[in-house]
Every structure is written in structure tokens, then in C-alpha cells.
Length: 342
Ligand SMILES: *Cc1c(COP(=O)(O)O)cnc(C)c1O
Image (cartoon, rainbow, N blue to C red; front, side, top):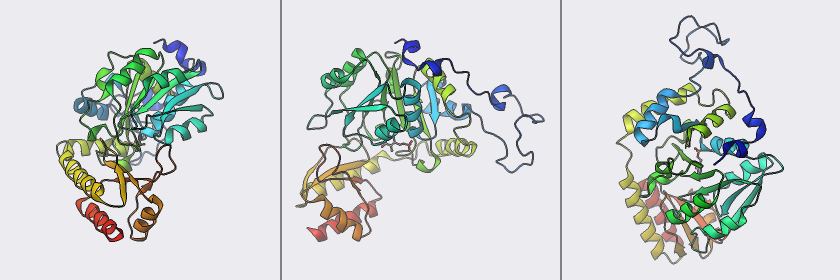
């Protein structure tokens, strides 16, 4: 992959903003270089712009070298940075599938970049041939979400490889839900595919949605360019410290078995319910459920204080609600409430 040809010219030529912390990052002496308030509040100093301590911890946990890691203010920020790095507004396009995560469209629109959407197969599997056929000269990035939101399924390794082999530009794989699946992360393939950008988040499995931390894994060359494009202090120091502490304390605490057991329970219940036409197989912490009358079920649940996500307007998702796996009590309440309707 030739990055020089793929990255926007203005980004290639950009000299990034050089912050006080860029120019001096040694031991803290008398610091009169950043116009901070000198009085200690616990928050008065700017944070590490490259989050090195946190990256070292994530590198340990994820088995990916630090030079291959970029952190964003949520993975939503990384999606935006990827679009801004590679796509010329009003000229280039990005390619993704439908149905998939709605932020790709919003982020593309904000940047005045066209979003091309290729339909998934009826069973929501990936059609690599159709995707490759839709690529044109202005297609700069392909985005694939696996496991996919809102459908819950993972895409076949074979199909994704086919796309990586044939497409010469960056392929961004959004793995927001990979921690719930038994599939390996595509971050293991960085050395085989230089154009791979894998993004993950601490917002779902790791239970830190409030802290806003997204992770990208990519080649050091791509990471270097993302570092130029990002705002200098995009991850708050408070977030860096808190995430580090959480990861140190909770590494072994997060419980996949819980999600598996609860998902199975809910899945079995829904499959038996006369309200339900189909429960789609899920590798994530939610179920996409086709009801006979989704709107009626949605309104009834809402009246009873249960909020689920109506996805019926999404492509091929007529009458579908997306239901997150809650606590055991919340799931029980959902099942009891649905039983009263059926
Ligand atoms: C939730 C979600 C995200 C957002 O992650 P943040 O890190 O919280 O911004 C990204 N992609 C998909 C597919 C998601 O479902």
C-alpha cells in the first residue's frame, strides 16, 4: 500500500501543532511552558498527548506493540480521523455495508464524504464480490463492522481476507464487540496486511463507556499520521489514569460467562415466544429480534419502563428490535413483561 498516494495531500504536508508537552516531556521541574494554572488541583496540568503509560498497559493486555496503537476519544473519534485522513471532501467516498453502525454515515456526512453502502446477504453475511465491485477510483476506505451492529453476526474470515487481498486502500474493521465473540481480533493480522486499521472500544465489554476511550491498531506509518491529525490532548488525563487503574484492577474480573449464560437464557425465551418470528445469531452482547409487530412490542415495553432499540427502519431489519443483555434482574424483568403481552 502506498500511503503517499492514499493520504490527503494537505494531511501529508501538515506540520502538526507542537504542544508544550511535545517539546518537553522529561521529569517535571519548574513548568512555565504551557500557561497552566500553577496551583495544584490534581487537574491543573495538561495530560500526556500520546498516553504512553496507558498504551503500555493496553499493549500488554492486547499483545500489540505500542507503536501500533492509537487512542481516540471513543472509537467514534477514530472513525472521524480515519475519514479526514484519507478522504478529500466532495471528491472521495468510503464504502461500507448495510445494515451497519449509523455513525459511519454521520461521520462521512459531516466531512462531506460520500458513503456507499453495499447490502449484506439476506442472512447478514458479507458479500465480498459485491463490495469489491462497488469500489471505484474515489473509494479511499472500506469500513466493516464485525461483529456487526445491529445484526450481531461476525463476518467470515475468508470474505474479509478476500477484500484485504483485492483492495489497495485502508480497510477499517470495527471490533466494538469482538470481546464477546470467540473470534480472534484482526489486530493479529497487522503484519500481514499493511492497510489494516482495527478499532476497538472500552465502552462495551470493559464497562467504561463514560470514560470515552477507543483504540486503533494499525501500521506505525498510519499511527504517525493519525497522531498528526488528532487534537493534541484528545484523551483527558483523568480518563488515562482511571482507565489504567480499572485495567489493573479488573483485568480478570470481567465475566464473559455471565453474558453467555444470560444471552442463551434470553435467546431461548424469545425463540419460544409467540411474539417473535426470529432471533438472529449473535456474537455480541445484544440480540437482534424480529417480532411480528415490533412497534407494538416496543411501545408496550416502553410503557413498562423497558427501553430497547427499534431498528425496523434499517435495511432488511423490518420489525426488528435490538435488545442489549442487561443484568440478570433486568433480563428477567424483560421476559416477565413480554410474557404478559403474549
Ligand atoms: C458502540 C459502538 C462504537 C462506539 O464506541 P465508542 O468507543 O463509545 O465511541 C463504535 N462502533 C460500534 C459498532 C459500536 O456499536
